[in-house]
Image 1 (cartoon, helix red, strand yellow):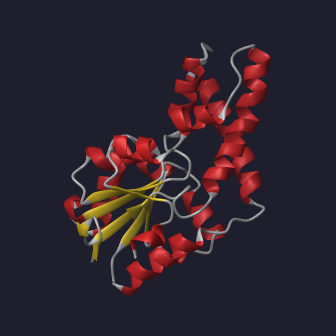
Image 2 (cartoon, rainbow, N blue to C red):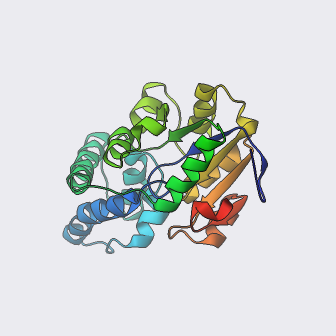
Length: 228
């Protein structure tokens, strides 16, 4: 298959949150629900949406928590970081239980790939990727899902390293050089740019076009059906 500005490719590797489903919004709410009261109690600078995009978006949960706490000068051992991660996950799952609708434009893009016989996989840092796809009614559209739990069990470094995306291409039986990466997070775009992939589609859900291009996006769109 070929798309304008991207050339030919034979597979597509999708991030999930913020690309296929608006779960990035739920993650933002859950992180805010975790960190705002914590930072207030610690007497440090308040939590903002900028913290989400800089420290948390697209990264493994514990890595993001550790880097944000370090930025605020809050000491935390691995057990405390794990505890905070579980608290955040509980907040997220509560929000997810109310339902989630995928982005219509992203579904149209997925439909076009299916019509063209292009294999695809989801590669997400989230350990809840399967639950999110099920809640969105899309689980059967992706035969391969590389989520945070699967990559951790294999010892694969998370984004911005390219390893999880390379593994996704391997599962599809496609050389990474023939696979497109689709991402909305700066760390995810960096992961695609760091690997030998056919290109990186940046979906601007708030990170900003300039930031996504600077991270290595081949093209940047607001909605994926702009590419059709």
